[in-house]
Image (cartoon, rainbow, N blue to C red; front, side, top):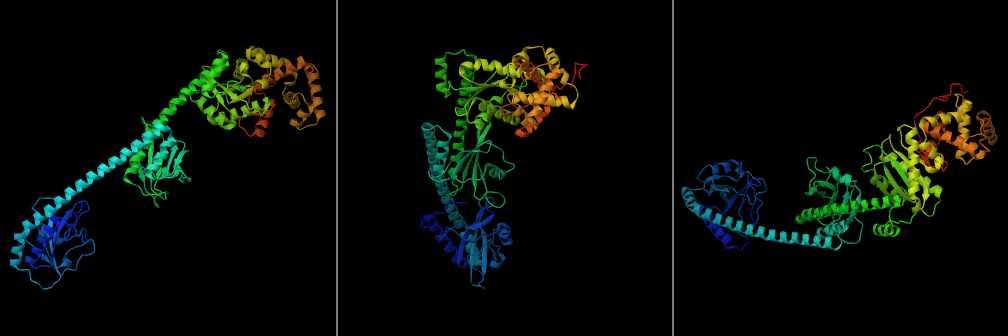
Length: 613
């Protein structure tokens, strides 16, 4: 309630002298002033005799107190009639209560007289003397109260000045950290030094971005952000103000935490958590956490702007590399400024996505591929889709690089894009001078898949999967191509199990580089069985699949059409290989890479050939 005066204060000495004289005149041993403490709801003694605290606390609801407040006369009673909320300072045999403050004045003041001598009579003379001294007693009490109030105000002013100095020091240190290092880790480190506590910065994914302790050495120990936020008050709004989370059985926290959301321009970027270790919380800790959070929020905005500018610059550079429109020296200079190796060999990926779904996919796809492959990935987005340039590692061959890229793209699409709808074409590994050709080839692959199959699942194929036939498939008439496949393979497109085995044998033979042993291994049969089936194919369709390169191209092109259409006999191979690779919606290619199956536009075996069989 007040700031107590020192023991040698003249105001206290005056009050002490008046109380001693009052007790003597009233025939009591001691006298004290009880002052109403509205904040705690009790009457407490006003310090005197050098005593700055007393355990005596009297309840306002006490019947004796109520009688004294309602009367202008002294109220005499035994001490047992006075209700205490704390141990008695002295065991009195009798007490007298007298209201000395005027009605309506605040705080209410009572004169308490106490005596340990039982049986001593309180006479009319004592009462008259007490009433005569009441104004003097109250005046002395008011003087002490006023002096204590002045002392409290001076103390608050001094405390405010010191607090302002500390806050100014906080702002100055944070300004120096931003001017010197201009990083979030530097701000967190200064926050830890100013508070003398462990500080951790989390992002929205609950990942720890940076941490710092009060000393440069040592590891910072902090619960997960999920554990901390579970103790967040359910009715608290997420704003820029720090919140002190309690520790104890009701929460999962061992120590108290100051949690400050990183909010800038109404957007939440993360959380700054200050641990009450190794020192207790101080009044300036919340201020330091709030100011640090504001600086970190500004850093988030700045870094996002920088990242956006760098992303746009890289996107423009990627477009120039693919178009081949820039001067090589200029491209190299731009790449050096952006940290991009413009001389690296890369695999080009062209992704066609449904309208309205490309927004944000480029960032997520690049991040996923860079994390899974550990190489640099460039991207640019156009009206037709998304284009990626994936750096090829020098320590692996071209076939392995393409295989890894296809697998990573398949995993990324499964995680980032709910089916159906995504089509991707993957080029071979090529030099920067060949990016334009690689883009055309990857687009042809995508066009083939788009023309011959419905978008019921993600589909990913490479240029090598289709070979030169992709030009024919991408630009020819769809109906004519379907008739072409039926004309070439019609005799074995009948609804007969033996013919289905012939189709699967043909496909495996081409997939394994025209190897009877490789095809036999995939099919689980003997090599001679493969050779017999190929001979039977020649007898049925009239084309030399083993010895004539032109016939091989015709048959392989027809098989591609059937696979795009999802022919049941070839779909069995697709399902078997996707089970081996462990990827949903996958088709194995000759490199062993799991990719998505081409097409669901299934046709009835023998369709368009009523005389087949």
